[in-house]
Amino acid sequence: VAAATGRTTIPHLGPEWPQVSAYLPQRQRVQVKQTGHFHRTEAAKPHRVYDEQIAADPSGWVLYGAYQSHVRHLLKAGLLTGGAVAWSLWDGYLTEPSGTTLTSMLAAAGVPLIHHHTSGHASPTDLRRLVEALKPKVIVPIHTEAPDRYAVVLGRQATPHSDGEWWSVTSS
Image: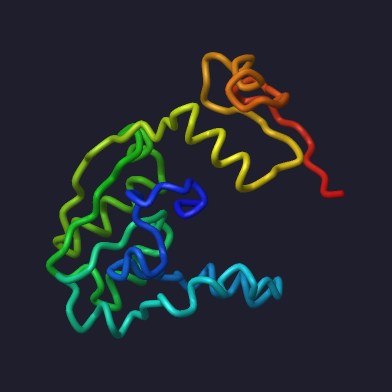
């Protein structure tokens, strides 16, 4: 997704960013194997980093991604030794069962949890570039106060749904 934005200023896998590597958690590796979707990880192959490489010098790495369900493994493998975990979501999630489990595990291991909320809101130009790169069949705007603006911003119709609304998704 980062490369699809077309912005060379955004870190992504490739020769422009040789210091960026790909770490694939166990659950993702299993999912790729089970589904046979090896093509999804093909571009990352030359840039893969493994537990052993990180464990050899944990202070030389920053893992960026959604690793909450993988924290137990990261701790056991020594990949968070001397490090910290940054939480960039709403702090209220930390009061839910998965959040309290995460904070307890980190506290027991002496790994600090740093709160740093980010909005993740994309600009209209970035949204347009993303849609052009992905060429989705349907666009469903989420977390927005102006879903009707997507047709203007993206140059094509979107299918808005209300927050909390469930809808069926089918592949064709």
